[in-house]
Amino acid sequence: MISEKMMQLGKKSSIIREIFEYGKKRKAEIGAENVFDFSLGNPSVPAPQKVTDVMTKLMNEVPAEVLHGYTSGPGDMNVRTAIAEYIKNKFGVDANAGLIYMTCGAAASLTITLNAITEPGDEVIAFAPFFPEYRVFAEQAGAKFVTVPCKQEDLQIDFDALEKAINKNTKAIIINSPNNPSGVIVPEKDIIKLTDFLKEKQKEYIKEIFLISDEPYRELVFTGEKVPYIPCYYENSFVCYSYSKALSLPGERIGYIFVSPTMKDAGDVYAAVCGAGRALGYVCAPSLMQYTIAQCLEDTADISIYEKNRKLLYEGLTDIGYTVIKPDGAFYMFVKTLEEDAFKFYERAKNFELLLVPSDDFGCKGFVRISYCVDTKQIENSLPAFKALYEDYKK
View 1 (cartoon, rainbow, N blue to C red):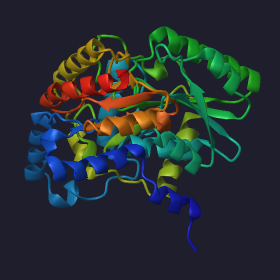
View 2: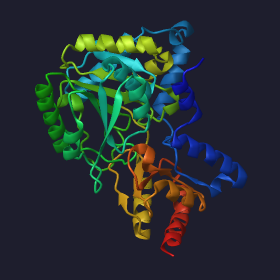
View 3: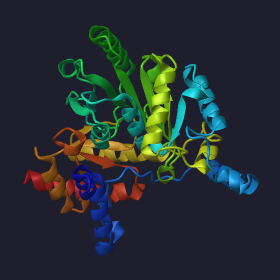
View 4: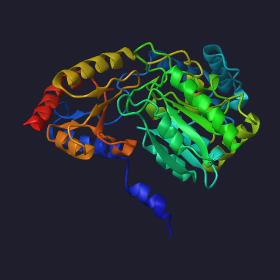
């Protein structure tokens, strides 16, 4: 009568959402100030004032039937042209509007892209730790999802593990830098090594292997380290971008897919993207948001608050004695658990009103993710609880 697969997906939400919902319930019981909820990657800083100003101006000056009407299926041509010019000026890639598809955020971008390129029997690789929905997106597209563990000491690419995992069925690799959940940035030397490796594998298997760059956190960088732009290094690449984090607009659901102009048969690949968007019902991304972001391409929210939180939390946890992978970007921190079972550690942390996300759903064991896109006061107030948890384990 119904899809068993979809029913099971609907019955079991992600662990992140489960913890978030538990947090809401717990806050109602004992007060929000007494619960240290680090579960959700929901930006805690407001969107730039310019975003509000642009939206207000649009609503006052653009006829409602235009502002709230349909755009072209792939997105408004003027908006796509503005994004293409931005890419060209910032990264030196010969982008054009005819290879950009506007979407409802990075989730839609990834879903459309995977449906556009995969066929039964194809495999999609992701480096662990990874955003849990990658598995859902890849399997929904009919592909087999393959996990390649990163090196434990720094969570960078383990090329030996990749060599063992890649094969003639590999259709795509997803890369996410800065990474959710670790905040790690893949350095340029490793991007060069990865893309050179894939070029050789394409020759060996006589087929295209796509590299999909998931980029909602590109602007959230605190170390001054370069975040390599994948189309500059590899021809068969996609960029799946979202304005949710950089502009603090997660609820507005706006982003895009960029097909590299150097990709083999780029026009046909873009047509497949358009076809996948059509088949999935992902056409005409929200008009108001398309017109808004086109005028805010150079802007970001005030990420200095995240940088402050990062410093406070990292120093606080390491001073207590925790082992922490120091993040270069995004607003997540990956912390080694004090016992092997991350879920048991998460349950024990709840006794101290600490809501941390166990790492199993991210494809690896022995860590928790802490989202520090919260009020700085929450971090300050939570440190005694982290210390009490640590001491409880050391008894």
